[in-house]
Image 1: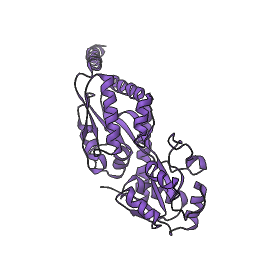
Image 2 (image 1 turned 45 degrees about the horizontal axis):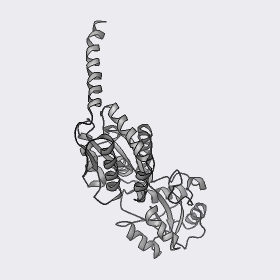
Image 3 (image 1 turned 90 degrees about the horizontal axis):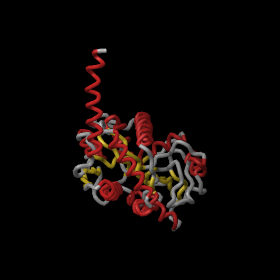
Image 4 (image 1 turned 135 degrees about the horizontal axis):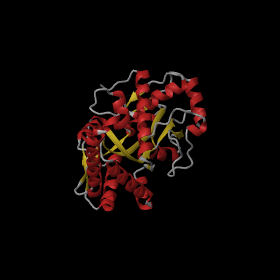
Length: 321
C-alpha cells in the first residue's frame, strides 16, 4: 500500500504534465521534414500538408528538406528529435519500410516513430511493351511464364521499390526475369519503347500518357484499390494476380514518445484536410491519390510492408548495408 501511495503522485504529475503540454501545443513553429529534394512528389505533399496544418493549428509549419540515402538521413534525424510534437516527417514506403528492411545499419527502426496518418499513394502499374500479347494481367503472367529468362524488367536501382517489384514478379510467376537498373522513369521508358526492356512497374502518371497513345500497355494497378484518376484500370488483385501490391505511399510520422493527445490532434486535422475537396484536388494534381487513414492503420501498413520487403530481400539476397 505504501508503495502504491508513493507511485500515485508521480503518475498524477506525469498525466498532468502530458495534458498541460497537449493543451498548450502548439506554442511555436512546427518543422515538417521532407526526406527528398524540393520539387519531387514527397516535397510537394509536404508543402501542401504544412500549409493546411498552419491554417488549422494557428502556428507556422515550415518544410525542411533533409535529403540523402533514400530518405534514411531525414528519418534518422527525426527519430532523435525531441518527442514534443514540433518535429514531424513526411515518411513513406521507401524510408520507413524498404530501407530499414534491407539495411540493418540504419540508425532507426519501426519502434522509433509514432504514426499519424496516411496521406497519399503514388499508384504503381504493371506496364509492358506492345509485343506482349493480350491486355490483362493473366495475359502478361502467361507470357512471362512461357518466356522465362527471355524478358527484361527495368527498375531504378538496387533496393528500389521498382527493383523489388521485378523480383516479386519473378516469385509470383516462378520464373527468372533479368532486372536492369536505370537512373529513373525517362530512361526506363526509352528502353521500354525500344523493346530493350519488356516490363516496367512505373508510376501511373509516367505510364498513362504512353498507354493512352498506344505506345505501351498497362496490365493493371499494383495497388489494393482502383484509383479515381484512372478508374478504368483494374487492380492486379481483382484480376486474380495476388502478391503484387507494391504501391509507393507517403504518410506522416512523429518521433516515438510524442504525447498521444498531440498525435490524435494531428491525425484529426489530417483527416479533415484530406476530406477537403480543394486539398484533395491539389494532392491528386501531383499524380498521387488521397488515401486517408488512422494512426493504427498506418502502423499496420508500415509493419506489413517492412516484413514483406525483409522477406523479399532475404529471398533475393538484396542488402543495402
